[in-house]
Structures are given as structure tokens and as C-alpha cells.
Image: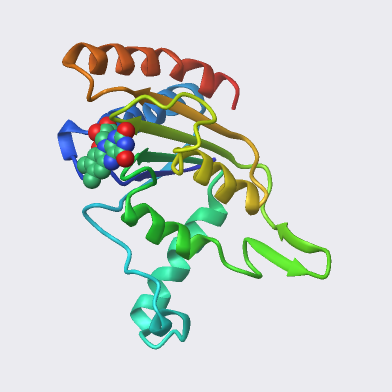
Length: 192
Ligand SMILES: Cc1cc2nc3c(=O)[nH]c(=O)nc-3n(C[C@H](O)[C@H](O)[C@H](O)COP(=O)(O)O)c2cc1C
């Protein structure tokens, strides 16, 4: 089984979502035999913005890297993503990854009947970190709801969130939010 582990926080060792994705992947690795884990750090090794030149495949090295990024996603059985909320949405480094994996003809298609996701059977686990507290279904949430839309669009509906929020309210809020998030992790691997 292939696990694609993606981090996008710019906060390095202080990151809540990096701590959670590491714990999620470690738990998967302890529970499911023979995992192949690929880690992508979009902060250290960022993907270029999608430009006209990218679409024209003008730079062959960039085109090859984009194909590798897309294939990594297609080949993954479980995708674990660290997704902090940045300005109500996701980090632009993670958006740059999304722009390389939502590709017509590869992960979705359009026809007279509308769009169709071309993927199935993957599990997506998203470690969500938020300074403020939004809960579920908040109109100001363009982070979790956006990611749910992105994966649903390509046919992936098994999307689970491990959420630590309100972490900027106080040091104790951060400790409590992280503890609550960690407590939900063991159930994820058991359900795989
Ligand atoms: C550039 C930036 C923008 C942020 N924007 C928001 C925001 O819009 N809403 C919010 O609740 N928290 C916001 N935060 C706080 C982060 O969501 C919070 O620190 C979260 O823990 C980030 O995850 P991380 O620790 O893995 O980086 C922002 C943080 C940064 C660095």
C-alpha cells in the first residue's frame, strides 16, 4: 500500500499539522503491513505556480516534475495532508500542489453530462490546524470545505479531518486541541 504524506505548514518544528501528519503516518505504519511512504514537504520543496508556460509544457524539467507529482497522487492508496488554515484557505504551497493533481483526462473528465471524478478507493486524511475555532460548516471556512470539494471532484469521498483548532487562543488551548486531535488518530488506521 502506498501512503503519500504531504506537509505544507511554514512553521517547521512549531507546526501543529506537521506533528499530526507525522503521528497519523506513524500510526498507519504500525497498523498496516508493508506500507510504502512518500513524504513531500511543500514548504522546503515547493511546486511552482501553474502558469501559461507550465500548461504549454515549455520547461521540460518542470513538466516532468509535474507528471511525477500527479502520478504520486494517482498511485497513492492513502493520502495524508497537513493543511493549516492560512487566511481562511490553505497555504499557497498546497494550492500549487492541487493545481498539479486536478488534471482533466487524468483525475477528472468533462462531458455533456458534466464533470466526473476518475479516481476511487483512496482514503484521504487531512490534519487541519486553525488559530481560531470554526467548527463544522462555518461560512468562513475555505480550507476544510475547499479540500473536501477538491477530493470529491476527482471521485474521492473518504475524506477525514483530524482537526486542532483554536490553537492561538492560549497555550492551554493549543495543548488541549492537540491532545483531542491525537486521540482521534488510532481509529483512522483501524478503519483502513
Ligand atoms: C500566514 C498565516 C495565516 C493564517 N491565517 C489564519 C486564518 O485565516 N484563520 C485562523 O484561524 N488561523 C490562521 N492562522 C493560524 C494557523 O491556522 C494556525 O497557526 C495553525 O496551527 C497553522 O498550522 P501549523 O501550526 O501546522 O502551521 C494563520 C497562520 C499563518 C502563519
